[in-house]
Amino acid sequence: MTAQNVWNDIVTIRRTSPVVHNITNYVVMNTTANALLALGASPVMAHADGEVEDMVGIASALVINIGTLSDPWIASMKKAMTAAHRRNVPVVLDPVGAGATALRTRTVHELLNTAPVAIIRGNASEIRALRITGAGTKGVDSTDSSDSAFDAARQLAILHHCVVSVSGEKDLVVSETRFTRVLNGHPMMPRVTGLGCTAAALTGAFAAVNPDRFDAAVHGMAVMGIAGEIAAEKAAGPGTLQLHFLDSLYGLTEADIRYRIRVDET
Image 1 (tube, rainbow, N blue to C red):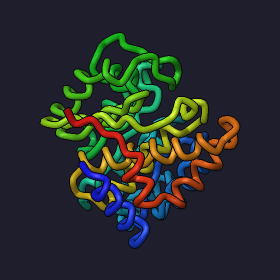
Image 2: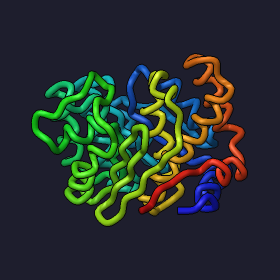
Image 3: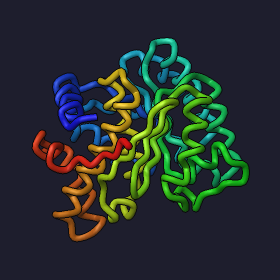
Image 4: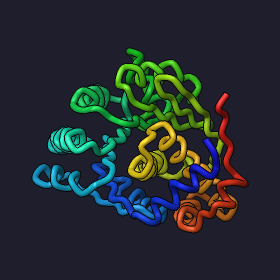
């Protein structure tokens, strides 16, 4: 994993503007759409049962986020994932709040059994809740460190033949045979609603242009963390951090990546 490879993906995203289809939650639609636009991708937020299959047909990646669940949305998620599998469109699944309620945990397992996913991206508590009976979370916030979710992430990766990306103070990316820690980011970032969901959306953009799902997940988290660091240096607090974060994504340079990237592959 090199800075040059990350930059190559960013250049490709900016040049091709891949469509990233999001079925996501009400809280983060605006935030994630703006982040994808700032990076260079083309976001679409579509969850209606009658159009999700058609929308997947023009997308280069599908991001499923269970943050605000309802029965009609769950049905649309399943339909979109099935269409994505049929068309070889990579799926990123964000199990927001898994472990907080039985509905959320059950829904994630149903989705994972509906069609293959390329990447599962969640916080440590969400990932642990998918493999450890009784593991819970603080609403949609994590109560665990990313390293504590390593075993659960590896089990999920093996069970579903996918990559698992665990966000935290140190981001952890795990596949069936590989793992990497991304050390970029800033402590203020968890104070902004929806940045975890934004990480999933950005991961979708990288999966749209990079067929290596492990590298796509690592690149997404590295860019997320680097943009957060640059934004925090200019921000007075969480409110302005969000604004500077979008500007940082938009203005990200190859030099920023080379100077700031911190990845531990040992």
